[in-house]
Length: 98
Image 1 (tube, one colour):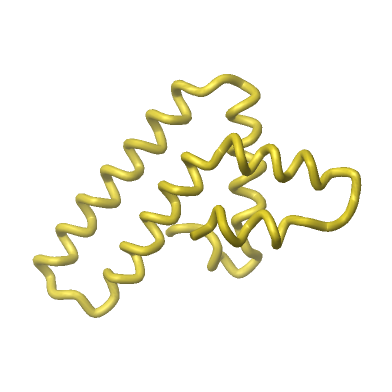
Image 2: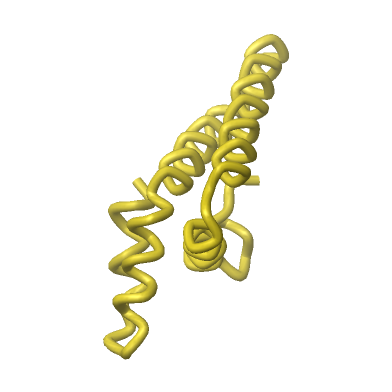
């Protein structure tokens, strides 16, 4: 799970550790949705055509949940979500659910 691994990876033993940790706590809902999407995305490789359609529908539902979650959050929560996305992302793109 992202929420289990990202906080440890984000720790730098500097003055911003609490900021990063707090942002990840406030955006746990987003990390959980990204985790669900990533798990299903991995299943999409090598699946039959009918199964791929089901996964596309699932991804659309997750994207809609993320959109709705972002639309209903406060500015502080949106900043936490943005920072969390940056902490999850990797330069090679492997950290973000495509």
